[in-house]
Image (cartoon, rainbow, N blue to C red; front, top):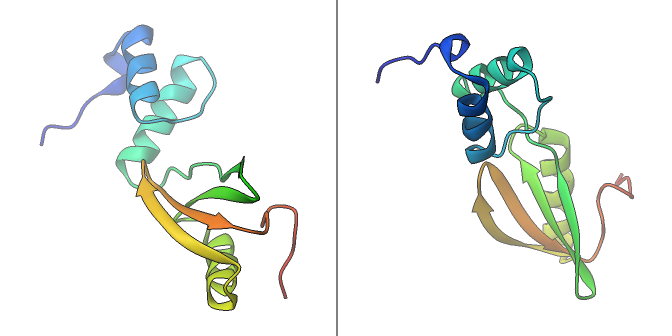
Length: 105
């Protein structure tokens, strides 16, 4: 696969790439190029998402957030959460507890 020189691309093309990869960054060329390169190297870390769903939460965790993945594993073992699916670099779980509000021991 040929490497892309993002610095030579127009701002609108960079914006489309960032949007397609669901990368969050500033709307300037330098930051977009930096984040795209991190994503190419597998080092871009996506934010953890929490959405209220029924009487629980749908929580999306990037694999690079090891501490949150460990906390979610503890919730799964205790029966407080279960795996849902994997999409766009995030593992999704259904949980009775919002792990961003609570610290587990």
